[in-house]
Length: 178
Image (cartoon, rainbow, N blue to C red):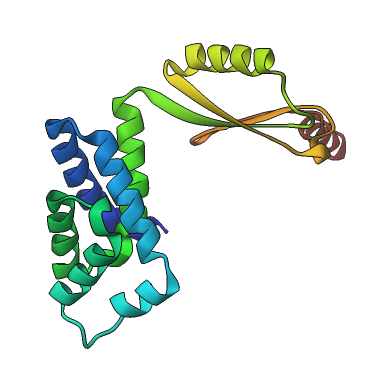
């Protein structure tokens, strides 16, 4: 998917810079997420992939389906994507936009997977510690996975911290086998 990311990056950057300058980051993030979700629909993909439709017709169809969720500027952005035959990149553009937004706001989404439900106090303490380490505001999302046996697995973007018992056992097995 590196190619999609490469193609989507200039559009995501342009949308981000426009939204940042207008102080509309959250609004644009929502609009891009909505448009991306609509483009992933099977019936919309058949419309967007229809060679008999012009770029204007494709853009109009997409903006009509999105309705009032898109403002005029987002509609213009969709039209530019359509004229460059890049509507299929909307999910990747939305994802990159969210990354740019998180970097701007100095925040990061962290997924914490544990063997058992974490108490609120433990989750808050973990978020505080991660916030200091990453120097960002941390938004924690938790889930459980009984195969971990104990401990936690933390994912924050590219960073993965495996503090699970299963992970430690796997490392021990590797050390014994080598």
